[in-house]
Amino acid sequence: MVLVHGWTLDLEMWRPQLASLGGEFRLISVDRRGFGLSTGQPSTDRDSSDLQALCRHLSLGRIALVGMSQGARAVLNFAITAPQQVACVVLDGPPDLFGADAADSAARAQYRALVRTGGIDAFRHAWLNHPLMRLRTRDPSAHQALRAMIERYPGRDLAAAAVENTKDPLPAQLASLQVPTLVITGAHDVAERIAAADVLARLLPRAERATVPEAGHLPNLDNPTAYNGIVRAFLEHHSSASG
Image (cartoon, rainbow, N blue to C red; front, side):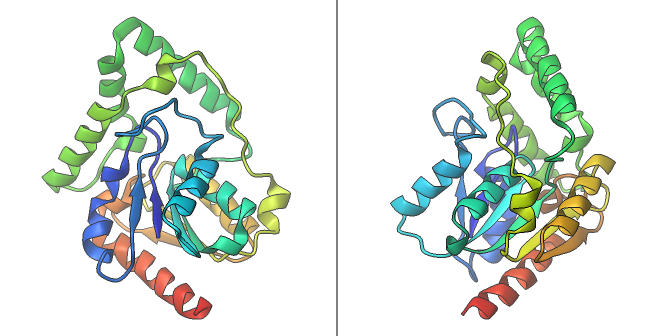
């Protein structure tokens, strides 16, 4: 199972899953290009090909893919490009792939302006207070992990000139994708992400929909016990079905 993190985060977000599921599945977490310890300029358009290169490098056969938030784009593009390699897919808090380009571009422009005027620390402070980053859990280790990831976020994509060429999957491509998919959100995720997840669950022909209780946009950190149980059941069902 290859775990793909969301925007401003890195592979450390998956520690609760590595601890709980690592004894049952081979888990591979990766820093996307330009995040965490990965070098290079962030590029959502190259995330899928980077994942393919990773699979070749590690000689991986069929895999399960988990894509969180922005990482869901990479996972879906991989599944569309190489469905024969994908046993199943988990989309965790996916973005609106069909109607939010203008809103996303406007928000990124505001963040770029904030970085120019106040520096990366000003952005980090603002982003930690954004509803998408708001944890509901009282577990101090989850809050510490989230703060550490945001502090590590280098902001290369915000410092660079604005380039908005994200190649999202088309509805027709998704409607023909015959890969078992779990679409998951926290019960208290923002309304836009819950709606986007509902749209994908209806569009994807082999999709299941699940909700993690007492969790926001980061359900794997907010309620790892419930999150891991849902993902475990999905993986066990489809790994046995494919075997």
